[in-house]
Amino acid sequence: MWVSGNKLPDYFPLRKLPWSERLYREIRGVKMKQLIVAVIGILMVMLLAIPVIAENIIVDAEKETLSQVADAVTPEAAGRTAEPVPSDSMPGGAEGSSGESGGCGMDTRSPVLDGGAFTSYDTVFFHGSTAEANGGPNADIVYERDYSDGHYVRLKASSSGYYPAAWIDCPFGSYHSKQGGIQPKVRYLGLHYRSDISGGGFPRVDAVEVWNGCSRITTISRTLYTTGSVCTVEVIDLGGWYSFDRGLNMCVHIRSESPYERIFQIGGYGARYEW
Image 1 (tube, rainbow, N blue to C red):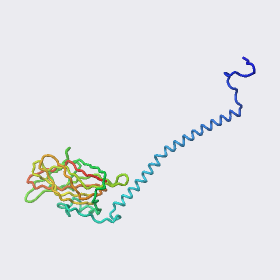
Image 2 (image 1 turned 60 degrees about the vertical axis):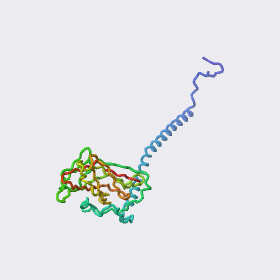
Image 3 (image 1 turned 90 degrees about the horizontal axis):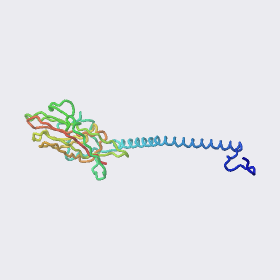
């Protein structure tokens, strides 16, 4: 159909552009696609790199913290003097120390005498079945067994001034440090225990040694016993706040003056870490 004026009606498609214009538009379209792909690639690389950079920063910070804490807990580097012995402590252990040949010596760090600055704490308890008699075979022990309600040690009967005794290790996990270089300290320990249900109060605790790794922190002279049929919790005060960065061991010394075989039970034991 022919329209007057030699003009195409509106519904007809536009005439083709010159080849130069078409080439320009195609090149521009390709460049835009390449630019979009390049931008997406850069964003993906950045997203993948961020976790690696953050991890490296954290690792470096942790290494620096561990180095600072290690320097801080080295007695020689800090120039610390020997710790004061609490008034309720004994110069030695009950019937000798629980450590083999005295361990690796007394710990020379001084306790924190004022815990008023502490605002946080973790109180942890371990089940008594993790406790065990110290050292090799002990002739005073009739048997040693673990049950669902704790650790049992049966001591021989006493006779002619002979009183059977044993050391019982109660080991803890301890803090070397917390995030940020914080090093929690301990002053209070807990012992969940029971003397024999016969009611005579034997075996009973007469001393508690506290160890940091292979170094003895202190020895507390205490007499602890029960006369009932249930376990009780006794809080043991160390007299100051101490760092335990090599593992905490509360070593309990028990003895019996009963003319009969008697059982001592540890249901659990705990510590309060403060910072």
